[in-house]
Length: 159
Image (tube, rainbow, N blue to C red):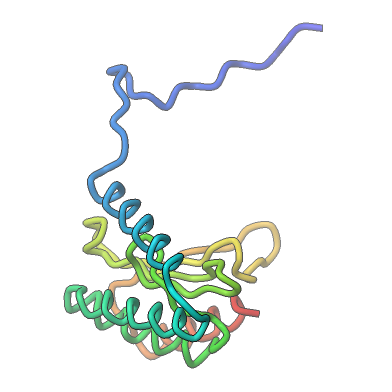
């Protein structure tokens, strides 16, 4: 029997040099390392929860106006729709976790120099529907209909 497998293609560019992570990706990884160190130093659960939420609110306040407005609204929607999810920073962005594992997150457009912000859901979210379903949404603004849809998605993801 002959081997019909083909070797995997290299992900290295044709130039032969690996470009590596972007400056924004490296910064996000450094922020995540700081978040993990800060979480390890915190005291009681109540203190941790309060500090995590304060960190999320502070990070949202630092965002540019359009991202900040959306992030503030999403923060309020998540707290209202899924009070069991705990706010936390994840790679320097607001996220919401169940038992320490991120369920959903907001990524500002400015952070990665993208043309839109993103609302994303991890594999911890209970959004499974058939064999294929969306896990992130591009956001340029939030309408009332968008907010309603986000509330439904977050509630479903959290359970």
